[in-house]
Length: 351
Image 1 (tube, rainbow, N blue to C red):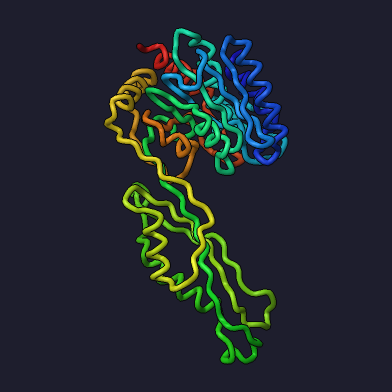
Image 2: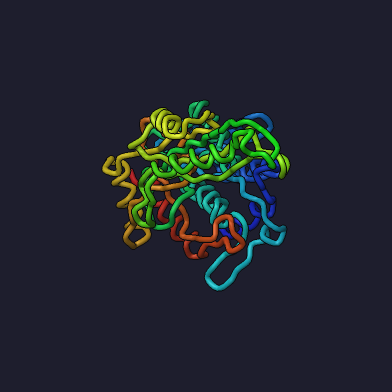
């Protein structure tokens, strides 16, 4: 099947992460398609979620393991019908990440048993990627290279920041708001502590982003307007680089804030040396195949790469040259699908 037609069919399943049944139906469809294409297909499970693996040869550890995710974020029904507008293909999942899945599927079928490659199609990346983590636990990996297709276009990313979400809780003494001196306002304590914490994270400018950052994203306090609250909470999203460790960050913030700190979520850093021979080889192949300069990048956001970092093979993150991910303008260039497919086919065919 033509890759554009395959993408359109995949979008029609409306595989929003929260609707596991829709995502599972897409797994069934794509698994059947890959099986008919001559690939070795295995469906694993995590709870009620299906997870798809397909390889050109039997086994769980091909030389090159590719990965992309079949789940997408919600959108109006109209966005699940592929539209053409000039050189662009528009719709939910075109860029993030069904376009990448369609390319991987057809590349593996075209490569056949002459190549030693496989792919994990995860099904909950948008909510943390537990299905990719499960596949890593089951022994799926790559011997030479792991290629995550969920990143920048015309670039190879070799690192992504770790995630540390923390809840800071301030306690005070409640009283009637007409006599605030009789109590201790937890909001005041929280705001003062937050200012001390905020000063520990210098501002980061676009283009100079590989630094640990902090964002305050949730704040909760009080229940009625005429009562001084005795508790107040703020949730911080910290994205850290290889220069910091989560345990050290927690100790530092506990000392600065003087508040109770609870870890809400943690996701590991992924960091590879771009000088690794396998990464250099792929980078050179990508430049030849796409006939343009390919940048080296590091990512502020997270992908399924974090779940495959523990293996010996280096991990690279690439993606289609699209735009508008998670927006109403999500799109990829039609020519980009063919360019990336041809490039990947050439890479997998190399000895």
